[in-house]
Amino acid sequence: MPEWKHTRQGYADALIELARRDDRILVLDSDVAKATKTCDFEVVFPDRFFNCGVQEGNMMCVAAGLALEGYIPFATTFATFAAFRAGDMVRNAIAYPKLNVKIGATHAGITTGGDGASHQCNEDIAVMRALPNMTVLVPGDYEESRQATLAAASMYGPVYLRFGRDVYPVVEELHDGFAIGKAKLLRRGDDLTIVTTGILVSEGLAAAETLEGEGIATRVLHLPTVKPLDEEALLRAARETRGFVTVEEHNILGGLGEAVAALVSLHHPRPVARVGVRDVFGESGQASELLDLYHLRAAHIVSSAHAVLAPALR
Amino acid sequence: MLTAETIHRLQEVARAIRRDIIEMVYRANSGHIGGSLGAADLLTCLYFHVMRHRPSQPDWADRDRFILSKGHCSPVLYATLARCGYFPAEDLQQFRRTGSHLQGHPYAPKTPGVDVSTGTLGLGISTGGGMALAAKLRGQHHRVFILCGDGEIQEGQAWEAAMFANKYKLDNIIGFVDRNYLQTDGYSEDIMPLDPLRPKWEAFGWRTLQIDGHDLRAIIGAIDEVPSHPGKPTMIILRTVKGKGVSFMENEAMWHGTPPNQDQYERAMQELADA
Ligand SMILES: Cc1ncc(C[n+]2csc(CCOP(=O)(O)OP(=O)(O)O)c2C)c(N)n1
Ligand SMILES: [Mg+2]
Image (cartoon, rainbow over all chains, first blue to last red; front, top):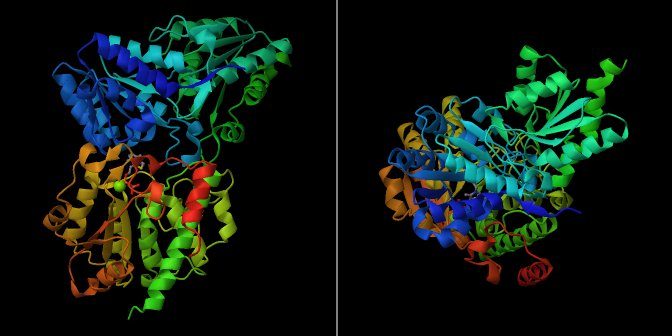
């Protein structure tokens, strides 16, 4: 059994590491520090932590101001508030002037669980992807979250970092070679490509295992960076395999799946099946139940794979 | 006239609602206890004495509206609605479960008696402004009651809504701030100071009162006075104790969103047992 850890803890742990070596690092939160885990940062660096209260829009613009003066602020809140509550501030005060603000967004996706649809943000990738200048990072486990946060600080420009609420399986294969914009080849295969982002990577790997047992050689490409897309790795997969199943804890509209489909349809058309939340709001429940109910499991990836390969096998 | 029996009856209802809150959050193993317990006295007064409403006809056009703007405190609303008869009390056991109509945050399309869907803080006074304006446009005489958290009104939108209600003289709005001085990350005056709160609302043109939010007579008395102030929205600042009714939960930030374990659950239920 793998170990399970919070991805948001990876974010908070990285912030502490970063602040130790770079004076410009500051952390902002909006009265959810206990939930995002930036409360850990506050303990170590109380003078470099700013709790804005329940004021996400204000926080984003304060971060913009700090960035204009040379600081590297990490503005932290839940994904739905970052993308929507403060969406205009992110667009016009941060992305448009291309400021060096990092947005740490936790409680993304259906696995937010009991709080229900108001808090389960399945639309943030779509919004953030659509913003020019924005880099969108969606790590898959604790360690990848930590590395993504470190990498975000080392590049100039706005970055959206997406984390979940729950604990998620630690996936050893993710722990080497994090680079913004680079896919990770987790498994080789020339029949089909599963493309994952975020915490469903473990389901993608499990699906590949099942497919392998059926004689379908399955490649697994994991994309902790949704934008910029690793076009080279995806187009190679388009040439070398017969189709794609994309997997994301997000609406199938606007997310990774559409990005992959748009790319391959132009350069090397292949069928792309999208596993994700099917354009509905979620509901309250346990994270694990919701993954079943909203068809985000390995079994659903496997049946999508069959659908993708069916014409070729006929 | 508020007789001693009436007050006693309301106190018993509030206590039953508090027991329901503990039970729901314990069973769901998630949910917001502290702010729910602290608002139980207000919701009891509203739903069992003040508001004109018909549990058998949730969409009655002339009912008074209620907006739980601090939607995370859904347990107190659900328990109150169940005790009024909007739906069976057994449903409370399904709080936050898949397939249940009792979502983590109020969702009007699913739950009978919930007027407005909430969960994102800071929206309720605006939505209430729209509903109150609609009532004015149609010449309807119902009122719009809105409950906000104190942390919640750090959102700038609360103050945008305050300006709007003042401009359009929405005297059919009766708002409440649950002034418990606590929010997720701790003491509100440390997180983002709000004091002095009463002059802020007054400066925004609202008739503003401040009362003990656990004094049932004071709550009912404050609302009864409203009609004598035409042209102004009313804000009643309720001085409350987050976690009210369970000694070890009172005034503790930790009980904002932590479910009780079995031992804590049993102790809480014991404290709230029938006198
Ligand atoms: C816009 C928005 N930001 C953040 C949250 C997360 N959140 C839920 S409750 C809460 C604190 C609310 O404190 P307060 O309004 O004082 O409520 P109470 O003390 O009555 O529970 C926060 C920040 C939210 N639901 N909505
Ligand atoms: Mg409060």
